[in-house]
Image (cartoon, rainbow, N blue to C red):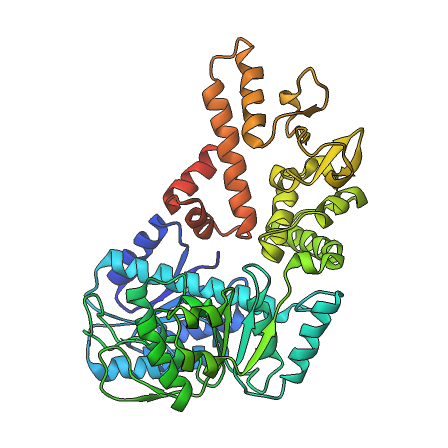
Length: 499
């Protein structure tokens, strides 16, 4: 990860922040004045530049607000946190007007300051991923007729600012469609802001969308711009709109009607110029009938509806997508790309993929880390893809529909050589739990006395590697997916020798 740049003429402030961030495994680089920061920015590559900039507002040799203006002109996506001992409204307003990520009054609580910086880091990493996606060519892959219809619709909508509703199952790529609509629109030079309304707690969603004034609720120590303000002049993507709380739907309808809204705790209307693209996997018509979604908001959003097909409806794209994701995953992890055999592709094309394209992408990350050879064969596929799909008989893939009886046990490939049993190179027990039981039985049949530790280390190693593969190496996000703390995953990586 790139370092956090700290700019403050007070050496003690720099020292305290450096130590606190290093304890959180966040690298830092410090400066005592804006002039040195601008010089370092001019000579730094993208990889050497800052992940987040934390700057004092008043320093000898330059103002933090002037620095903010110059940095934003060169690096508009870089989160900048402004610190100041002069906690007045004018400074806060100036900071936000200049595009600051957040405003931190001194003296500050150190854990809260670190948490704010961590939030800015996560925002910066999301922006980097978004930029990578926006720069990918092609943005979306698909030769299936259903996908060609989607591409044609994107082309027809490219010169329009009309509101679009994207429907489709979870994991089918609705955000990619929204990004493509933005990239090919008249607003392409403006920001693209995405928010998943289902992922944010109900009591925080209003503030997240519309921002809040300082002191509007407990913990609101500073004024904060919401997503509608951040997306001004660009596109706001509201994912899983069907899960938006009913009381917030009224506020959203007002913004869509006249472009005005109030921050939480605010008394002055804020004007914004935003194109809204919404997405949902739910049946909104049924939600309207059930009273869970406003009918007037539904009609306001449903100007143009664009349906995205599930992956099972475009099986002819699976081979191309698989090879693309294997290449992409190898590039991210810095390894040689895996290749996939025709027989393994037959397995994948026969699988229903309930998680759609996202599930296929995660599977390719898993294969990049876990498959033992460069050529991926059916036996290398994870159990959840093999169960209920096919039998493996003498290295031949036989679809279930062609077998004599669907009641006979599904034969799965052995995942580890130590788990081989007398039945040969396959086992007749379904699932990874069965493989684990066989592995444990094989080890317990020896004189080994640390079976628990051996299997636990192997299990934790595979779990962490799979999580890191699915998050493209981002430890904080991997820890969140696993439900463990960031310090825990760092310690485990060191203990297990996964560095």
